[in-house]
Image (cartoon, rainbow, N blue to C red; front, side, top):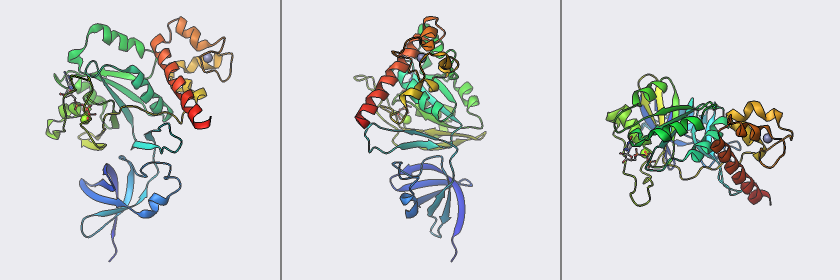
Length: 313
Ligand SMILES: Nc1nc2c(ncn2[C@@H]2O[C@H](COP(=O)(O)OP(=O)(O)OP(=O)(O)O)[C@@H](O)[C@H]2O)c(=O)[nH]1
Ligand SMILES: [Mg+2]
Ligand SMILES: [Zn+2]
C-alpha cells in the first residue's frame, strides 16, 4: 500500500527520534538512512535540526520516516575548536535570536552575549537581548547595558519572569516570529516561557547558591507554539559558544557599530588590534564605540587566533 506523504516541522529531537508537527499533530519520526550519508549534511553532528521543514512518509502505525530536509533559510550553529569537531546546528529557519541574560544569579555576562551575537550577525538573523530578573536589577547596571549596546542593532528588552514586568513587551515583540531562546543555564529561559503561558509548566530549577550557576534543567532543544503565529525554541543552557570557523580578519564586520568605520582603517584587512592608524581605535577614544564592547571584540579576536593556531599550526 502506498504510504501517505506529508510535510511538517521538526519540533524536538531526542536521540535518533524527531518529533515532527503537521497540522497540529505530533508525529514520531526517524531519518531515512540516505540523509545521514548526504555529503552536504555530513559536516553537522546531526543532519536535521529543530525548525527544519521536512517531508516524510506517514506510516499506518502512526510513525513517520523523514525523506528530505527542505532548503533552510538560515541556521544557528556553533563550532568547537577541535579540527574534527562537527558543527552543531542548534536550530534552523529563524526570524530572531533572543539572547537571554540575567541581572544576577548567574552573573551578567555581556561577553557571552557578544559571542552569540557574532554568530547571529554572520547568519544575518536579528538579535533581541532579553535581560531577565529585573527584580534584582540596579539602575547603574541598566544604564551600563544600554550604553554598551548603543549604536548597535541589538534591541534590548528587560523582563522579570517572577513579577511579570516586561513580559508583555517581550511577548508582543515575538508576534509572528520563530525565535530561538538562548543563553547560559539559570537565566530564566524556561521561566519566561512559563510566564508567557502558565499552562506550559516547563521544568525550571534554582540557581546553585554555591557556584551561582544554573543546573542545566532543560535537556533538549524544543519548539513551542503559541497563538499569533509565535514559535519559540527553548534550549539547554550553554557553557561555551564556539566560533572557531570565523575568520579573525572578518570579525569586525559582525560588530555592527564598527561597520561604517572599517573602510577608514589604514591597513586592509585591519584587525583593529595592533595596527597603526586604526579608525576603530579612534572611535573608541571618541567614545562613539563603547570601550568595553571593543575590549570584548579583542577578547573574541584573541580566542579566534588561538583556535587558528591549534587548527593549522
Ligand atoms: N528573581 C528572579 N528569579 C527568576 C526569574 N526568572 C527565573 N528565575 C529563577 O531562576 C531559576 C532558573 O530559571 P530557569 O527558567 O530554570 O532557567 P533556564 O534558563 O531555563 O535554565 P536551563 O534550563 O538550565 O538552561 C529558577 O529558580 C527561576 O525561578 C526572575 O525574573 N527573577
Ligand atoms: Mg530551561
Ligand atoms: Zn582598524
